[in-house]
Image (cartoon, rainbow, N blue to C red; front, side):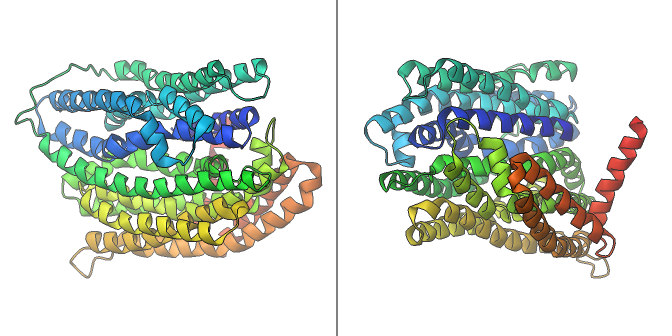
Amino acid sequence: MAAGSVVSRATGFLRSAVVAAALGLGLTADGYAVGNSVPTIVYMLLLGGALNAVFVPELVKAAKQHEDGGAAYTDRLLTVCVLALLVITGAAVWAAPAIVGAYTDYTGGQASMTVAFARYCLPQIFFLGLFTLLGQVLNARGRFGAMMWTPVLNNVVVVAVFGLYLASGDGGSLTAAETALLGWGTTAGIAVQALALVPALRAARFGFRPRFDWRGSGLTRPLRSAGWLVLLVLTNQAAYWVTTRLATSAGRHAQAAGIDGGAGFSAYNNAYLLWAVPHGIVTVSLVTALIPRMSAAAADGDTTGVRRDLSYALRTSSAAVVPAACALFALAQPVMALVFGYGETDAEDIAVMAGTLMAFAPGLIAFSGQYVLSRTFYALSDTRTPFLLNLVIAGLNAGLSVSFYALLPARWAVTGIAGAYSLALFAGWAVTASVLNRRLTPRDARAPALWRSATAAAQARLLTAAVPAALVGHVTAHWAAPGGAAAATAVGAVSLCAVFLLLARPLRLAGITSLVGGAATRIRRRH
């Protein structure tokens, strides 16, 4: 499963590089970035968060409680969700101008181009939802691979579409036909990604039959839980609305001031995409595999089992995520040049994205930890508490973003906005950990909170090693910079990893030792 995620992220790098090479980081790139982000915004706002958090625990419970293994319940839940997706998609396409207007202050040709991109991309809502629904059915049945591998097909389609544009375009302003090609091509990638799950469902012997006998079927409970998730997503999207408005405004102001470097939303978006890669490969893959087991333990009242899986998820994910965060911080400049330094992207663009990535990097640790903790609440069928705790992150993110935007010059505004998100994530992570600790600590004082003691100590030791590792990685990458971005990245990464390995024994970094030992064992078996 992790291998599929790695290949997916690798092809995602290629996709992002091709898009940046085709559009650069100016207002055209901002228009595409906003238009392509709108479907995900609307989807997550109205349905996506609920599907991700509620679906697997509900299917696991239904399999335990119904004589047919939950087949009829699954059909009813899928029917409700597919109908909701169709309605939401149609309404969003119709309301595209209003949606774009809510997230940007564009006027004239820039507004028209962005609305066109949004209209071509908004049908993605249906396919995003379908991909999530079918993938969660597979996850509930213990089949995780397909959902990790099919995004590769999405990336291949988009790379082909933008490659066609690069081969045939003149590099000037987009024509109506080119806008349609890029917009519909991006949507085609999501459609292929969703439909590619069908063979895996057939292999799992899953057959869907629409059912409309919803009365008295038990759908009220997941819908009630989904309501809290919708509220959670609303708060996240309120903060994201602030971020998008500020970042797009920063891009316009930077261009008006004659500042080269595309210091707008596309720079923020590209840095975010790269920043989230380790989380997607490590934490999401790990938690996706654990959620069915944690949900089953929670349904059986086995709190010890939930705590054991939570402890394992936190320790294992942090062993990879902390070094990754150090690498993103120390190697931001050469990594950005390696991934995005082609075509319309110049050195100033790279500098803006590198600064933004450095501001994001520390927050990756909290982002990953927060994800594990919130999914534990979902496994416990509690969506209300994560909503209340998420108010801390969303509120701080919005407030700090506004403050940094007002205080910093246009060139550094998006960097400040990224830093605001990192600070908000750490605050939310601390509060969430405290609440979940009280929730899972046994009332019997003689039984310790397993995840608290083990994980807190492991995190502290990892963070102790992170400082010298990041410093050494940055210095060696700078020393190797004359050899090119690839050489600087490789030298910096090797140096950084070497520091973690050297400190693994004296600091008792068990997670690092386990990862290295497991890799070495697999290599020996292959040979």
